[in-house]
Image (cartoon, rainbow, N blue to C red):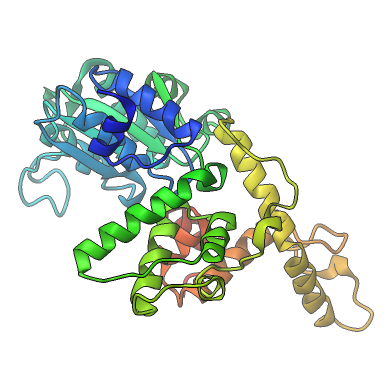
Length: 373
């Protein structure tokens, strides 16, 4: 099957060089049982690649089980993955199969694999190596013939260096590593995505849409899309519904794009293309810090203005200033979380999505900074 036909069949949208290379790799590895690690920012479409790998494999007639590792509480993740026996813990009123047992003969997609606890990572490694696992509360080994595909928006190599991820599991997972680039690095794919998203939403909801003017399309292509394809999809659907299907101009589109700054939004910073995830994350952090500089300075002034007349910047509460009047990274992080929660009216799921972290990480940070209500 040629590349374009493969893309149509499996819903992979894009003609950029980066997407062509990804499709070529998917076509090569899909028929095998090799483990694949998919990396990329939140919302780039890692699950689309995982589904293509499964649907083009010899296991396609069996089940694809998707597991969001970041959404499962730490105390329950082993029970969810491997199952449990009746009475193994307080709420275990009956024996239950885990995802690995359910996915037997098929494929299991472990999304947000970087969020799994170290204790669980040991057991995941055992399944990958031998196919063996034990239910919680059982002393009997079971086996599962399952292909493993994992995904993460973290740099696992960095996590290994920080001793937050096991090196043996990392090397076992990345037999093949597919890096999905952010939408801002494949802008030529945006018109194709717009067309696909409009047609799909129109057919599912019976909505007619007259389309975008050229300047509106240009604005959409110049926007950085921090939420990637997921954000683009939500924006397109909102425009179609709230604007009653009329043809949209540039000014109409701007209302739906947060902090739109036009083509100069990149500020001449390096563009990431097929770089390592670590490099991409560093660039994102740098961009965020540049954007936040003015706000941080304003916040610092507010804090200092609230001090007594003769107070010095070093008198700011310990841990919130580094002694020279600037905020520490911890305080910056705390305030970003507070602001995200305020903007989303306390909805932690939406706040976590905005901050591009998992809900579990957000809960941990809220506890760490004492932000519980």
